Amino acid sequence: MDRGTFRERIAVNRRNSVFLILLFLAFVAVFGYVIGYAWIGDPKGALFGLGLAFVVGAISGLVTYYGGDRLVLAASRAKQVTHEEAPVLFNVVEEMAIASGLPMPKVYVIEDSAPNAFATGRDPEHATVAATTGLLRKLDRDELQGVMAHEMSHVGNFDIRYAMLVGVLVGTTVLISDFFLRGLWFGGGRGGRSEGGGMVQLIMMVVAILLAVLAPLFARLLQLSISRQREYLADASAVRLTRNPKGLADALAKISGDREVLEVANRATAHLYIANPVKSFEKRAKGIFSTHPPINERIDILRSMETGGIPETVG
Amino acid sequence: MSVILLIVLIVVLVVLVIFAIVTYNGLVKRRNDTEEAYRQIDVQLKRRYDLIPNLLEGVKKYFRQEQEVLTQVTQARSRAMQPQSPGAQAQSEAQLSGAIGSLFAVAENYPDLKSDRVMLDFQEELSSTENKISFARQHYNDSVGDYNTKIQSFPAVIFSRMMGFTEREYFEAAGPERESVTVSYD
Image (tube, rainbow over all chains, first blue to last red; front, top):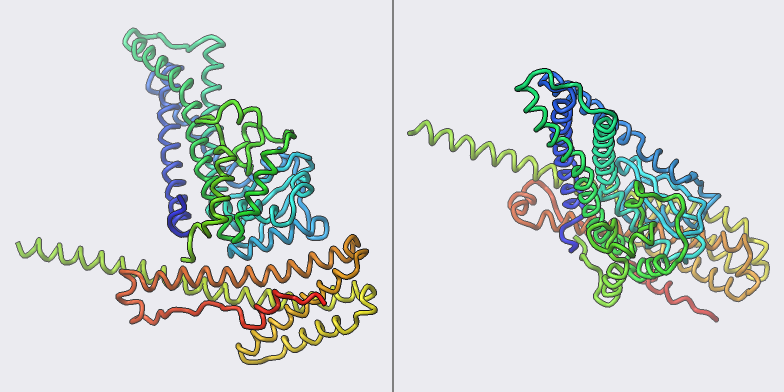
């Protein structure tokens, strides 16, 4: 599961990020073209739709890339803390930054009794890690170190940028789909001016409706499967940093055993957290609709490392 | 025919050159990483020198009966700060860690100190400082392992030595450092 060095993993993530952006652009182009055609009823309308979709995609992409971390932190009502305000958390994060050779991220605290944590930002130079007050209260130092090592692994592996890009993809797809479907509801296209064009427009309309219904679903499934793989990787990398699988395993056990619900988390931010904050959801759907792999499986893997040694030897 | 052969030769040559450049740059990057990681150890050691006087000042009053353990730390600190050979440096650093360890052990003898806010903060800062040093060393070893593996692996191994890339040594804990783990609770 944990093959290759950090560097190779980062390279894979970078390549996937580029691939994802290209896929996204192609999709937005097709989607915009089809919707434009279906809506206005001629190729000129299709070009207009294409242009509009590109603008929407580009703006949401840029806004997320440069301000996504702030949006996520604001939505989670997280506050930045200094070394004096949260010395143990700050020290633990600093230790993990040193162990991974990454710059020190900004440290935020969320006022919530449910234990959880996440990392965000566009690259390690602009990274933020956040922990809830519940996490700080319920975990001991070793456990907290395991959790922060997991978060720093997300930072070091460029998972944070990837998660953000995937978030944009899902968000924009949903936005365009909603925009189209709602418009459809309020009284269809203006087309049907020429007979030939009408036929094409009808086909385009059917394709557009299909895309608008299916695209958000596929985008969401893509996001979920990516986010599940990343959790296993970050667990393994975390053990490489702390050399202590027990800390993270105990932390995950405590987090999963906790009954409290993280109020500030929602479907848009759920995939960022170390453990799925939307608990009833995880119980209902363990399979393809979960942002996280089953936490017991993660704990089992970590427990086996306690006896079997570090998953990846030096180098 | 000879034109095709020439083109093939040129293409092969260009690919080889590009490959060599990429490999070379990768090796340089890794070598710089190990140097950076090594400097980071020094940064953390210096940080410890700077922190110790402040930290000791804050808890001085708790250790009135245990003056010598405080002086041990202070003396170990000044010894470690003196310019010396790398081997001696490692030894005095280990002695400083040992002195800090016995300071913690002494604190254990005072149950009322365990719940004292100032004392807890002091212990957190000092043990975190120790952690940071050992994590910096761990990171150095990680990057050395990364670098050594790379220059010993095919294809880089063909020319890595020719271009002056040689294996770096791992940081090994000095003898006294290992002793410091077994602090005596007398």
